[in-house]
Length: 114
Image (tube, rainbow, N blue to C red; front, side):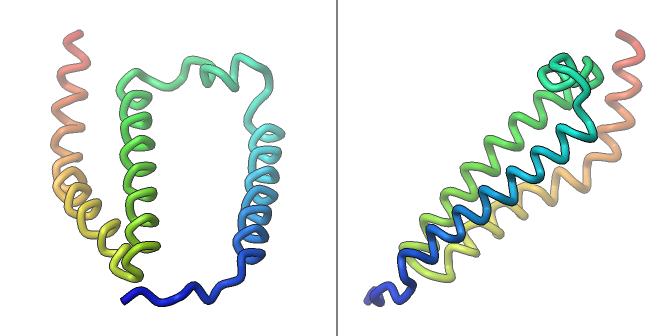
């Protein structure tokens, strides 16, 4: 049986506003230290390769969906939402992490041929 919500709504608003302020300061710090012009901001001065760019987009989309699913499950079912996030994602992360050194060496040899 579901328990009634005991957290006041204003706590959610305060947390969201606080997170927004923190992220604003992070963005300002990054802009001040790393970005010199629009070219740096939009295309990172062309220093990021295709593989890294594609991999980062896939990672962001995958983790965004995993976080949304885990929070929805945690809201519906409680603490088990944590397991909805950690078990499938660590299960997919572990084989990739153990194979990445091998794939990196093979990929660098293949890239030299191109």
